[in-house]
Length: 211
Image 1 (tube, rainbow, N blue to C red):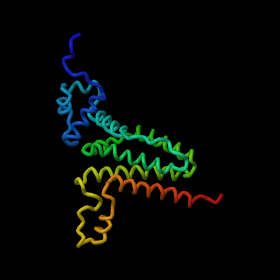
Image 2: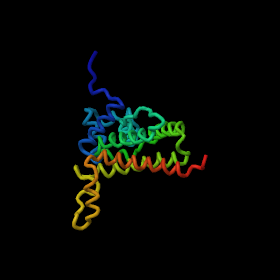
Image 3: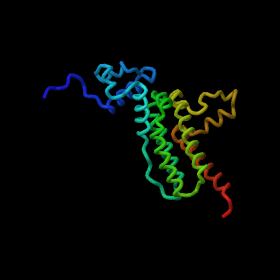
């Protein structure tokens, strides 16, 4: 059987190639002609798999989100830990491709995210700790906290923590607080998520009517 005259493409191989370009050259360095060169094909070949650039970029964003590792279903008493681990894992997946952050922000895959949120809402319903409104507060707040963190950390200079570079002569108290933060950015984020989840749960318990 004769070999094909050009590489055989698939949606997955095209997405992987696009992400390689973004990891190497940044989002602004990505274009369909460059992707064709990366894959060894002519640009029109890409349109057999994706209608246009936007559909391809949406698939790249979906691929990043799907790299999030789902924690095992927790015991009833440990549901907070599950949400912390899930959120930390989402941050980790996104920051594995910091130069691709713009595509994740512009094409955040709501289909993938909504399926994940439904599973999380089912878990919260099963444990019965939070009323429906508090469940939305938790899920929406975690998304905003995580996306905001991803944006800031992707743009931050390597090794620069929160409020890094603050002049202790001008802002002594802020510098003191910044020096006390964990050096590990993931651990710092984990502590922020834990504080938020505990806060939502505490507020829900406090607002619940007496039994």
